[in-house]
Structures are given as C-alpha cells and as structure tokens.
Image (spheres, rainbow, N blue to C red):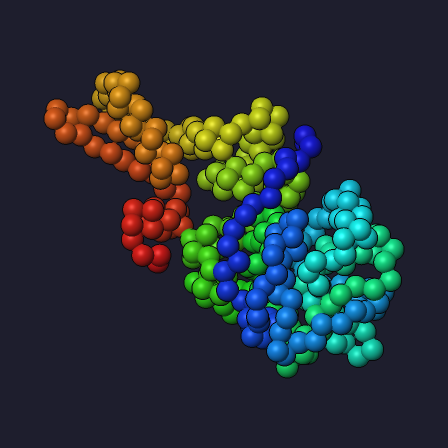
Length: 309
C-alpha cells in the first residue's frame, strides 16, 4: 500500500457538548487544529491542573491511529504556548477517566510535562451514561477515519439500541450518512485497513460494497490502490463487474450522445453522486439514475430537495 494521503475532514460539531459538560459559556477561539476544540468553562464542572500520569485512557475512544510525529510537534507547541483547550475527565476513585482529549494528553506526555489543564466533569450516574457520553463526544471530533466512525456508530446502535435515525439526530448527521458509514464494517479487514491508512477513501470503500463477495472487494481495492483510481473510476469498474456477473439482455444500440448531452449527463452524475444514463427520444428522452441501496435512494431524495428521511 502507498503512504496515506493527508488531509483532515471538516464537519459541524452537531449536538452533544451540552450533554457532555453541562451548560457551557463561550467557547474559546479555535486552536491550531479543530480536534482540540473543547468547551473551557462549565457551571457543573471544575477546571483544574492534574498530573497526566493519573489519567487513564478511555477504552471507548473510537480513534485508534495516532501520528507520532504529529504528537511530538503538538507537544512542542504545548511546551511553548501552553495547552489552549483542556482535556475533559471524570473522577475514578483516586484517579481520573479520560472523556475527551486523548491526542492532547498523549502530546503532553510526549513533551514530558508534569501538569495538564483538565475539566473535571461530574461522574456519570451509570457506566451506561459514561460510555454513551464518551462515544458521543469522540464522534464529534473531526479526525476520525470512516472505519473508526462506523465502529462507534455501530457500538451506539448495539449497546444502547439506538436506531440510525436516533444516532443521526444526536450527532447532527443525516440518517443515510450514518447507515452508509456503518455498512463499511461489512468490508473485509484488508479493505477496512486501507481506509484507515488513507490508501483509499470512504468513497472508494462505498463503491466496493457493490461487489458480491469479499474476494472481489479485496481484489478491486488492490487495483484501485495500485492504479491510483479515483472514486468515479472505481464506481465504473464495480459497475462493469456487476455487468459481467449479470449480463444485460440484448437491446437495440442507442445513438451516441452529442457533446452537449454528454456534458449534461456528466454534470448530473457529479451533482447527484450516482451513475446517470441519458437517452434521446425525438424531442424528449429519458434520464435513468442508478442506486446501490436504500441509503443511496434516501440521499438522492434529500439532494433533490426533500426533507431528510
């Protein structure tokens, strides 16, 4: 696999910080990265400095990948400028359980600092509440991979019996986005690893879901990586593979599209994010939009102006 591609996705924070920290005041200015954004004051939580050695990692942290070089750089920045946004913890006997800010905590440890600013949140009423708060907060981060995000969504659904719609409402996402992300967990482990490593994108992975079995998905993922395929190229390859598995019935050859009609067809594909066919019939014609599953259909409905389903 080639080296991962860089670039963090940006998205809205959605809802959930009030539930995590209680009523909050003004949020401080954004730091050097949006995964450091945390509310700095709360009427129900205390801001203190604590020994980072007393903070235990959160086992429900969805993020599994931490760039060591980036941690060193962040640690040097914290050493020079201080930590702009405190970590969030809750009491666990004589120690603390991390709720938010594992990257910052790791950077503080790498820098060898003896104290770290922390918001000590009141302990959850139950282990269930603590788990739900940790998963929800970490899903609001902007730097999870699609696979990490899918695993956290799945945990919320399985552990708390939440529907995809309920998860979407809690996090400010659309239901199709949640459903389509969870479907990525059905891909074979090597393909999921390629997504985590950045060798292929979530868009590539979603296209591969159209193939009928794990062997074909893995083989085409390898092709996509080796040839540097775009998401669109991968989608076309999947469609071709589907065509070989289910040969179409013989039809009358269609006339080639004019340059203007082909440009229009491509524009519709780009706008809708789905394969589009356009056929002229006299003064009129036919436009056909292909979709892989209900999630694609729901997303198409929303793009065409319908309220999210």
